[in-house]
Image 1: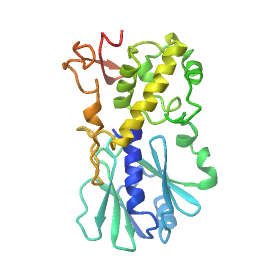
Image 2: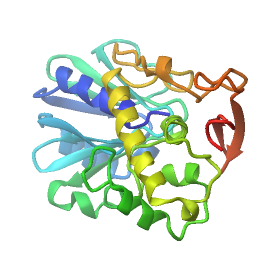
Image 3: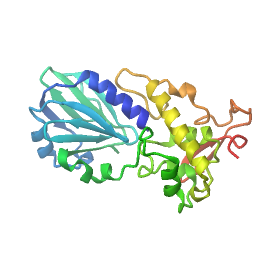
Length: 272
């Protein structure tokens, strides 16, 4: 699924392609992914220009005049830019038509994605935004902050890194890479982590996400780019999806286990 680096890549790409475009119509094919009344959403978007595209965690924020159109890609959501008149594909559910006869199409095979309109001055009243934790580069994401968040948690650290109320934007891929880089066993409980280990998590999160964004995110079977951008960070992955391969640090065999229902890849030697 798209994580912070992939969503940021989508944001940057769309910012180059659709900023200041005026919306002439909206075709809502599958309305169940909308948390806003479809007619209200459509009528609000028509004749508006997209001023900017921002991001909070895994949420994309399309800035209009008095509103944000929020979009969460969830597992397999993608945006395509097409010309008016091109055939509508099976899983294209929301189509935003611009006056220049181009279209922004939201494609989602599983239909898990979400969209909604939120008034600008009420953005942080929306639960999905209000509950977001600090992002990897936020100066408030410190070892002390993590120690406080983890101190009463008996869940594995891998599961805690997927909690968007603690660190915003991490998903299964980067959580695996962070705990490997930090040399922490993914099964270790949050309340067992030391202040020094929390610092290693902060450092690993910052360095990995910075490099992943630089390389356009990660392109794997479950998520590929749809805007002419192919992520290259998969070439830098140390453990994720590498079950049975040798660890590049110690040559031990990388293992796969399930934690909280999610496949987790790690090195038993490097992450004792």
